[in-house]
Amino acid sequence: ELFLVKTLGLSWDEIHVEAENIEHAVSDNLIARIDSYLGYPSRDPHGDPIPNEDGSFRSKSGDPLSDAPAGFNFTIERVLDQSPDFLRYLTEGGVLIGTTAVVVDNHRSAGVITVRIGDRNLSMSREVARNIIVHENKS
Image (cartoon, rainbow, N blue to C red; front, side, top):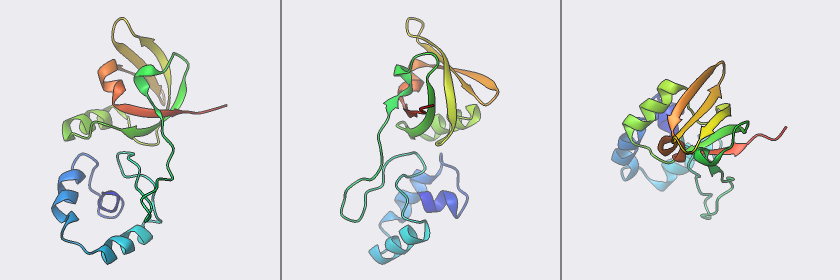
């Protein structure tokens, strides 16, 4: 998937189907060469960890954005819901892997969380936020 995004320019909402189509048509040797070409990445375009050759993971984990309190400064690490419509929704809001943001407010009773990405605020349901895994940026 990462090769399709970085090298061929596909968007993250369209790569899963394409990757599934070619996954069983390439050799282990080609996979190893693509891995080398990409610099042995630790995460795919959705933030999911990619295992090493021995099956172990070198990536850290995070917490759901829905659990973050107001003032929490974070980086988006992973997206759990990888459906094309959901990924397009996130893209339109600027919610992308590696984006840094801060929680403006987390209205648990109302089911809404507001984050500041760059110079704009974005409100989303806690259900959406549960599918966004983040890690805290320590000052």
